[in-house]
Structures are given as C-alpha cells and as structure tokens.
Amino acid sequence: MSFAWLVLHNVWAKKVRSMLTALAVAVGVLTVVSLGVVTDSIRTTASGVLELAEAEFVVAQEGIGVLDSALTETQLDMVRELPGVDNAVGVLLNTSELGDDYPLLIQIGVRPEDVRPMGVRISAGQEFDADAEDEVMVGIRLAQDLELTPGDSLEIDGEQRTVVGVFNTGSEFGDGAVMFPLVSFQAEQMVPAGLSLFFVQTSGGVAVSEVQQTVEESSPLLTAIRDLVEFGQSDPGFELITAIDQAAMIIAIGIGALVVMNTMLLSLVERYREFGVIRALGWSRRRLVGLVLGEAMVIASVGAGVGVGLGFLTVWILSNLPDLLGVLEPIYEPWIFGRALITAIAVTVLGVMYPALRAARLSPQEAMRRE
Image 1 (spheres, helix red, strand yellow):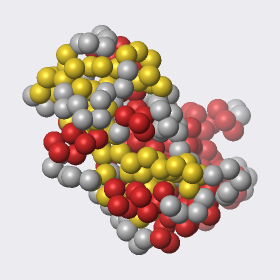
Image 2 (spheres, one colour):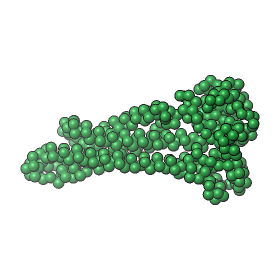
Image 3 (cartoon, rainbow, N blue to C red):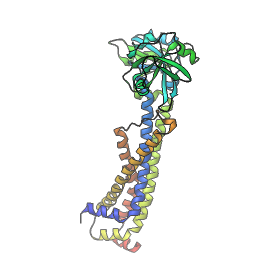
Image 4 (cartoon, rainbow, N blue to C red):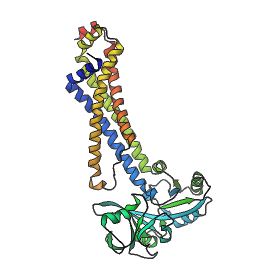
C-alpha cells in the first residue's frame, strides 16, 4: 500500500467530510476569482480611454475619475506651452447608450483639425465640419456592427445625426465610439470651453516622465497618466475597488481556513484510534502530519477546481446583467488563476495545520484511550 494510495483512500472513505472541506475551499476561490476578474475587467474597460489617441500620456483632473474629469481650454493652452510638450489635443467625453448592443457608448467631442494629429485614421468619408450640429463620425467597429456608412443616419440621445465618416483608432475601445464636433458638443453638454482630457505628445529626446512631472507641477489640479497602473492610482473609485478586492481575499481565506479547521478537528476526533494504530506501527510524527496535509491538499485541489468553475459562472452571469452589458468585459489574466491557487493552498494549510499537529502529538496509548 503506497502513501499516495492511502491518502486518496482516506479522502474517498470520508466523503461527507471531504465535500465539506472542499466546499469551504471552493467558496474562498470563488470569491477571489470572481472579484479579481470583475475588478480587472472594469479597470481595463475604463482605462481604454487612454488608447483613444496616439499620445505619450493623458492629462486629467486630479483626484477625479477620468470619465468625470473637468478641464478647460485655458488649461489646455497652458499645457501646450510647457517645456517638452510637442502637442496636446483636448477632448470632451460623455457616455450614453445605443440600444441593447451598446449600453455604454463613448461620445468624444474633438476639433476636426485635431483628429489626424491624435493618430485617428479616416477609413471612409471625411471629418465633420467644425461648426456642424448634426454631423458625427463613428468608429469602425461600431460602423461594422450597425452596418453604417457615410451618409447614413444614426439616432443618438433622441437626435438624428448624419454619419459623415468612419474612423479607426486601432483600439477596440475607441473603435466603438462616436466623435462629435467639439464646439457643438460643448454647447449640447452645456460646458462652454469645457474639456475632459488632454492627449499629450512630447518632443523628441525628452524623457516622458520629466514632462509628466512638469505638467503636474504646473498646476495642482492636473494629473498625468501614462499607463494602467497610474490610471488606477489616479482614480479614487478604482483605488476603492482594489482595496475591497484585497480585503475580500483576506476575509475569504480567513473564513475558509476556520471552516476547514473546524471540519478537520471533527475528523481528528473520529480518527483517534486510526492515528493511534498508525503511530503504533512505527509512523513518525512527520509522516503522520504529511498524511493529514496530503489529504487536505487533494481536497483543496478539488475545491479549487470547483471554485474556479463557479467563479467563471458568476462572472458570466454578472457580465450579462443589463446594467453591466458593455461595461464588464471579462478578462481572464494568468495572475487570477495563480491567486486562486494561492487562496486554495492558504485556506487548506492554515485550516489543517493545527489539527495535523494535534494528531502528531498523540501517543498510541492516549489515542486508544480516547477512542
């Protein structure tokens, strides 16, 4: 009888105990997988705004979510004059919906002369006129999904708009957006001279980090964002989401470990005679601890698999809720599976260590008497 066979036999022989322990592990893994995927997916979706234009970094309002950022054309002129800044394009952002397929439609107000400097390519048609009130350009993905071509009409927020062009940004986020002439869009949103973000291109030979620092030092109201990490740090909402995600992981591990410990302690009481016989046969304390840990790790593996499956199911259900369609696009990064494995191991090791050590300290005589 091999050691591995004995481990598997013991797990199978105590089906109810094994299932309860695996369930505790699965709940912990379910929590960290679903929250991890949701947090990462929402952050990635929202940070897609950074890819709307070809720029070294984006300038937004300090301490405010990127989509809620409120800047002015006066600030844009100031940024354009800073050392190391080659060009800066200001845009005004808004969100709306366009039927069930596009519950989150990004609207971008931009001057027609700034479209090409942003790195946006016109795939069909042309740019809108600067003072047009009913002309728009649509992203190539949106145009393909809705079968739109230049000259077609598109209803947005109850108003009929004429599609004059189709643009391509090279990013999935931007290619599902709609562009409006900035001046008319500012009037429509009732923010004259208002902007949301500046896309900044730096001069050749200048360190981007130095220009970022120059921008932030020029005004306490501005923050320069270069990548996803800085995006998360600049948005209080995402800092809160990340903190909740981390706290939930710690709580899930703690609660799961307590459940595992309770189940294994009950198992210890049931198996006093078994452990006494094993010790009487000459097993060392270390080997007995290895037996208990081996059983727990087999159960943890099953619980981890079940938890990951339930996590995927939970995320799929959430992503198909009407309020989250288009907002939550599940992204399954490798680190999420790594964190699931860490959770399963942590829950199991923390929960089983005390019962395993108690079992190892039993003498054969004491085990026989307790039984």
